[in-house]
Image (tube, rainbow, N blue to C red; front, side, top):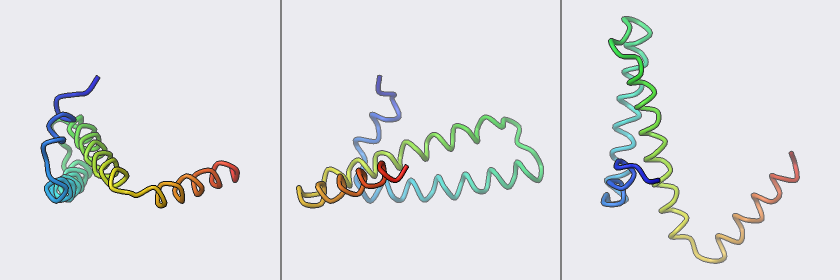
Length: 87
């Protein structure tokens, strides 16, 4: 089931998503540093920030894949198949 946060991401433009992703990554780094030096009042905020970053990155990648043409998608599929054989 789609979460409320995920549904809100659909309304963002591509540029807004990238700006928000950069902002969240920077905020996460500051929180991580603060947690290492002083300790956060609620360390679960780190988990929430990581998950928000993952949500945004997933949406950015999904939109990139939507914009690809057939040739690019076919090339991507070949690369993924090759990686699976290497494992």
